Amino acid sequence: MTDRNSDIERLAARVRGAVLSPASSGYDAERTGFQLHHPHRPTAIVAATCADDVSAAVEYAAAHRTPFAVQATGHGHAVPTDGLLVSTRRMTGVRIDPESRTAWVEAGATWRHVVEAAAPHGLAPLSGSFPDLGAVSYTLGGGLGLLARRYGFAADHVHRLDVVTPDGRLRQVTEQSEPDLFWALRGGGGHIGVVTGMEIGLVPVTHVYGGSLLVDVEQAPDVLDAWRRWTADVPEEMTSAVSLLTYPDVPELPRELRGRSIAHLRIVHLGSPGEGSAVVEPLRACGPILRDTLAELPYPRAGTIFDEPEQPHPYRGDNVLVRELDPKALAGLTKAAGPSARVFTVAGLRHLGGALARPPRAANAVGHRDARYLVSILSLVAEGEEELVRELHDDALALFADTALGRWLNFAFRELGPDELRSGFSPGDYARLLEVRRRADPHGLLHTGHGGPGVR
Image (cartoon, rainbow, N blue to C red):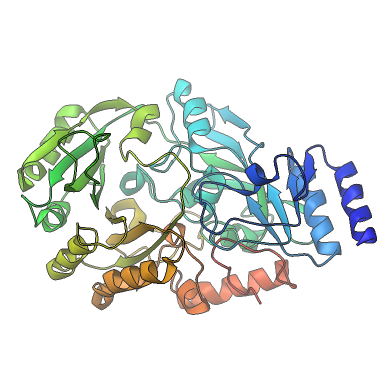
């Protein structure tokens, strides 16, 4: 123990940031993120402030064969580590090059940081629906965002990655310099190393027509099927989603939502308000509209469209990518998130296709581009409810088994087994990911949110 303590002291002397132990002030705040269910309990935390700090931390883990994980910002991990935790939340730098329409984004930057830096130049990133989501981790998982049907996955727009591989080496990874790593990191879910920064392409977007329509499900029980029929012929400029949840009957909520099962129809349209409104008009006929917030928005405000919770909480989630949506399955999903659900549950659908279905200029590991919809389910988890939630999710997603293609790993908020991980990729791509991972991390030291392909 004395030798290990001495090694930790030497590590602390090498890094600019702090090295925290369980006895340190700030340890609990540093080890927890947005996900409060089963938080990390590491023996040490490196609160990194730069790429050199990350390299020093990973070198330490490699020298001691210590498992390690990385935590930045956003919706968090699913597999806790008791080894070394590398926290990158202080690495929030963003640099915009308006001439090349690119951004350099450090490991801990959120989409809010990137969006606000790009907006003055009339540009936008392929950002997600939650502004405080970590931009790097989101992109490594593929990145299914607000402009997805028009511009594709965020991973398709990555130009370069700086990554510390599990041997402690800091590498500049491009299509030319490290083709296997470049392929695997974009869509492979971060199982290869710790990305300290990335260069991404930006798109010329300043405004969107967007917002939400809120519908009372009791008065419009077929609202999900109405949305499905509407998506059949909308243009690529329209990216949309719908979620279902039952609000508690409490005075803190607006009167029109209390105790009701509500469908949130989320709209993001690239075009004029008149064009967007015309596309949405048939959707307004799906049932009585309790609230209509659709309007032209500057892109920095587009993060309000999904109106996702901002406070950390314990939760579990799962999903399935499908070819088609069966109306009977949609009725079952409506019930799963309805008033009879035994735990608070949110069911969701996202419309895919468009640019998402087209291969990128440089191939990457993003799987199942032929999927037309994503079906997701998420529940709050209290102590002792893990098995209940898992059964609820399994039963709900089993309704879509006939048209299922696989899983979208960015929305799988739980530990996945080998077969479940494999379902996120084509068979050939998964085998290639395993090989790249084995070469980069032969001892299986890096622990990621889902366990990771090839973890022993």
